[in-house]
Image (tube, rainbow, N blue to C red; front, side, top):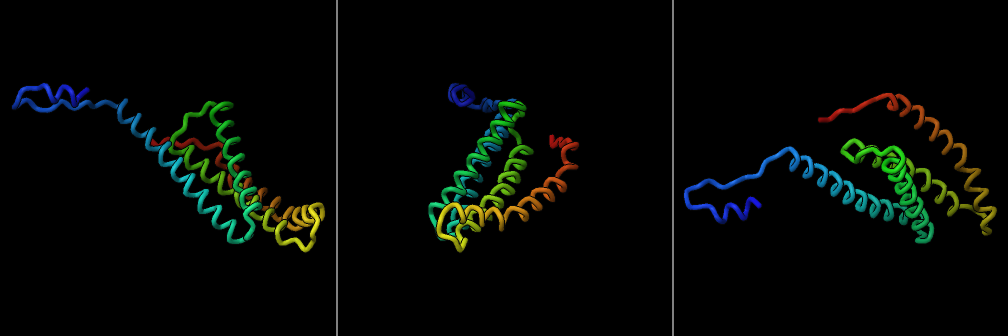
Length: 158
């Protein structure tokens, strides 16, 4: 609209500029979502490369990535559908941290499964759960304990 008005103004009249907090808020929201999605794709690509490097098995690597994607979709469904929280910078950071923590657990289970000395699936799963079960449970407990105090926090950026 402003460009059209500026084309029709007589010479010597300054250009019209549309300014509003609504435009700035829309721009911030768009940039937050765009940068979050871009970062998510880059992080998933790097994560897939790292998982593929350690496991050297494309099937297991894709299983981990599918697991991470499902965790991401469940988290977004919980945030948007259940809690109806608007997506902002704090939520973008929180989602990134949550996905990072969950990728760690999936990778360790798949790595233990892949390095299992057994050849049949049942024993490989039992071995992976036995080897990684208590360390992952301990890690989950320490992560929950370390983040529990954040449940009472409110963050106001703007």
